[in-house]
Length: 210
Image (cartoon, rainbow, N blue to C red; front, side, top):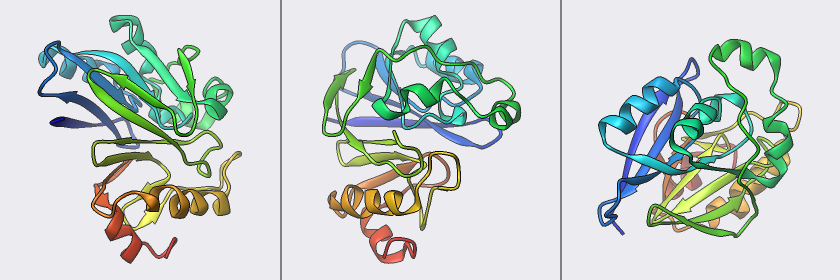
């Protein structure tokens, strides 16, 4: 599978919104991960590339990762999925975060709550769901063809914050060490903010989890 990945930085927190497709896919089908804000920008990109997302994934429940899901779902009829333990928090956003984002729209109930180890396929892309709690209780990472989309669990040489209402430092570090670091060393890490990295680089340079 030749995976093509585009990244759009959206919103005041510069969330990485990823658009995934395969070169082999005949249809103009794609998957969108973490549409956090600026739905007009995301829609403009999709329409300009003649793409239609059949699936929208959220790595976790925070508004800066799913605040633009509702407009995309309304426009394209996409399915929406999120980790099972973040379904309720997704509809109970922090007021300060919604205020900061400005254009947040509450997402609909998910088409399917996701569980650890589950395999889903959309737009010709096979997606393995990895439950990586700690940043939130329902945080998920998505392992796809030598890449892993980690949301706010693992960043380049640092980790996601764990001081919010449902965060847990020890749980987050365990998720990284036991789940993400079990992936191949050359796996490309695509986080929710900031630049990409690799599992091998994080094993060597990330002081929080060495």
